[in-house]
Image (cartoon, rainbow over all chains, first blue to last red):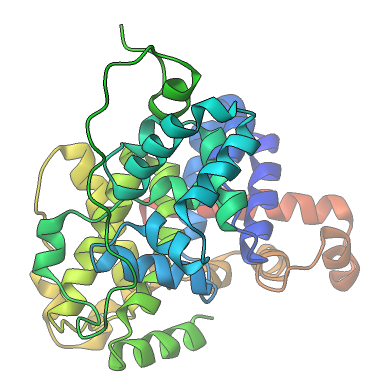
Length: 191
Length: 168
C-alpha cells in the first residue's frame, strides 16, 4: 500500500471520527492511482466505525422521504423559506440576471418536486442550495423523492400529518433557447 | 466499543422511531455506497438500502444481531446485487435462526475495536489511540515511549490489516 494512501486514509478516518462528515470522493480524487486501495480501506473502516447520533435535519429528511414527500421541499418548509426566496438566493449565488428568474424558478420547482433528475444538476446549484437551506450540498444532491410504490408498501409514523405535500408539476413551457440555466440544471446541451 | 450505540438502537427499535434510527445510519450508508459506486448509482443503491430497511422495520421485523450489523450486511448485499444486475436478493434465512453465538462472525466483521485487538499488541495499541481516542501521532509516540517513525509504521501496518480484512 502506497504511503500517500495511508496518509489520506488517516486524515479521512480522523475527520470521520470527529463527526466532520468528510467526503470520501474528494479523498479518492486526491489518491490518484491509489484510488482503489483507498476506497477499500475507507469502506472497511466505515463498516466498523462508530456512527454519531444524527442531526435534526437528517431525521427530518428521512421522515419526509419515508412518507413520500420530496426531501428538498420538506427542508425548505422546515427552514420557513418560500420558494421565491430560494430562487432569489440561487440567482444571487450563481450570478444570474434577474431576467432568468422565471426559468430558474421553473427548474427549481421541478428539482424540488422530484420531476428533475438531480444527477444532471450542477454541483454549484447544490452548493448554493446548501448555503440557502443550511444543509450539506452533498446530502441535498443525494436526496430524491421515494417512489410512490415504495411509500404504499411501508408506513412510518403514519398517524402524523405530513409537513408538506409535493407540488403539482409545472405547466409545459414553450420551446426556449438552450442557455446557461439549462446547463446548470440539466448538464451539457443534448446533441 | 459499540455497546452504547447498540443500546440506543434497541431503544429506537422498541419506540418504533424508525426515522431517527435510519437517519443515524444514512450518512454511513451513503458514504459506503459512494466509495464503492459512482454517482448516481451510489444514490440509488443507498436509497434502496434505506428502503429495504424501512420496509422490514415497518413490518415489525426484529433481528438477532445489532441493527448496525444488519445495516452493513444490507449495504453489502445491495451493492452486490447492483453489480450482478439482479433484483430482490433477500437476507439469508439463517438470520432468523436462534442461537446468538451463530452471529459472532458477523459482529467480528463490523467492529473496529475487535479488529485492533487482533493486531500485534503495539500496532493495535497505536491504532486504538489514533482512531478511537483520536490522539495525534506525536501524542501516541509520547504516551507509548516510541519514535514518531515507529507510530507511522504501526499505522501503516494497521491500515494494511484493515484493508486485508475487507473480504473477511
